[in-house]
Image (cartoon, rainbow, N blue to C red; front, side, top):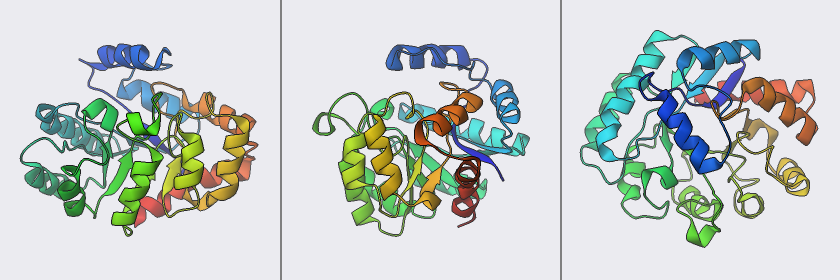
Length: 261
């Protein structure tokens, strides 16, 4: 099944507000409006049959309502596989894990920068220990260098060392604006990369190094909708990475293996 592994859809009441916040943070106007209808219409136009919808509660109080919406998306739209969210600084995450399991949620999204924790914070370890049956999607990287940033390829590499059997996705080809460190600390390891929010920013030489070093069966297509349109993301990936149609199909379908594990 052709899958976009990195998308976001927001409740209609907050979609425009969240898109404006993304605009302010990243300095780029989102291509989409953040609603589920727009997401699915753009996915269909791209020939994509399934999307993974991600959320990340920025404060502990948002965890339950964010997960309620994730469950609603997955239960309402057969094209959507939704990931849940937890917050390491909040109480009751054990019960929330049980609720996510009962609802058939397969993955968790962590965004250290937006959620206000550091990837090497010891408070994260009990949560990770208890959730190893879930897929972990980590946002990795930002404009600040690794030692000044809550997430980075170095910190994620240490999580992989500690949890060698975990199924981990490092978003943005291993680290948004941290690609040189992704080459050194993540590429070639047993970790999945998605292609989202990378092609407009990554240096050509670094992109080629990552693709040479990392297993192509561990690369997932991701658009990062609503920031980018899936069709535009596909075209950019093929233009920048020299990806032919067969390889693009492979990136689309690698999700089947991960979601089936």
